[in-house]
Amino acid sequence: MSAAIFCPHCKLKYDKAVRLRRHRDFWICSSCAEHYTAETLATACENAARSFLAKANYLKIMARRAAA
View 1 (cartoon, rainbow, N blue to C red):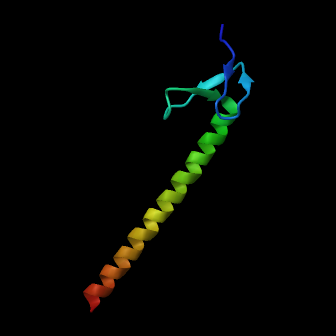
View 2 (spheres, rainbow, N blue to C red):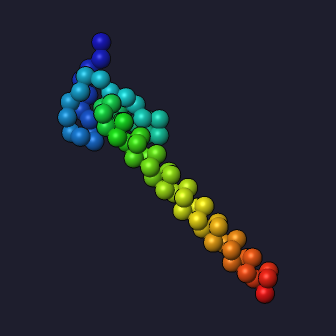
View 3 (cartoon, rainbow, N blue to C red):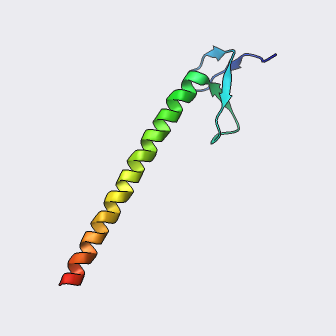
């Protein structure tokens, strides 16, 4: 039997909850977990794109220096 939890994210009580892998010290409701997962994935994609562009710009600068 599971007790109702108080979701710290949306401030509501839920019967079902999920434990986030990244934050093992607290539980949040499943709807907040879905939002959190999507938000984390979007942030990870944005960070990967920034990293890729930074590396491309670095290689472009190095190619210009080598050609000079």
